[in-house]
Image 1 (tube, rainbow, N blue to C red):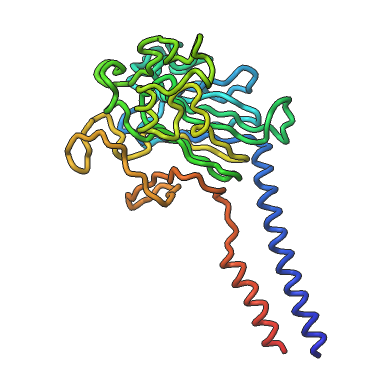
Image 2: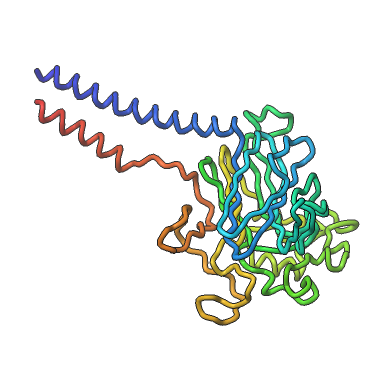
Length: 333
């Protein structure tokens, strides 16, 4: 009888650990399968004004289904990218298009004279989100299975933007510039009445600011007083050409959300809606990540601390299963 009970318990324990092992294999398999399918990019507009996302695919990349579209306040839209895709996204503002889609934008215009950018890039200044999606098992020559992404202010700034990775493995940090730099832009960099903020390179054209000529290497091109303003406000964004160490992020098998105006304080007005006073302070970033929209109106802004994958094995649930098997065994004795 005792031998039979021992065998029964051993079977339960063996089944339990096989279940854990299988579950972990499935998690890894799922991440690999996502890599085979590429990545989904979801664009969200949390501004209180219209944004027209622009899209530029790099040479050799399979183009996405759109190169530019309209995104109303509160609206979202998703596009699928194939493995190995690389390119950039930005948000155009102050656009006027007629019924035929002909027109232009006040900031980050792509010069196509259409809502679709059709292979044209953003006219500076523009906040840019840049991506290179990993290839399947690095099958493309010189490629990686990792995704690389960043938010760049090298070409200036026109609106707040955040990039959040979900469903992937690795560091998968959230990055972006959530501060409204238009409010604190130095007068010599300001565009118009504050619609955008130029980079020092765009404003002055000096080799020192553009990291060109005799300043065209990481050793000779250093942060300027202007790039330091950008970096202080948005520490995870590129502030000048060689700002790689703190500005490039990696993930594997993830989908990405690009959010325009990712905080409730990112408005055209320079007035803080909670106090009614003007402020140049960056918005507070909550410690804990809240990745989904909250129906009760609480802050949704994700933490800007690098974290692990959002996939987690519920350890407490597994422990309860093990305890249940053990208790069941002893009751059968």
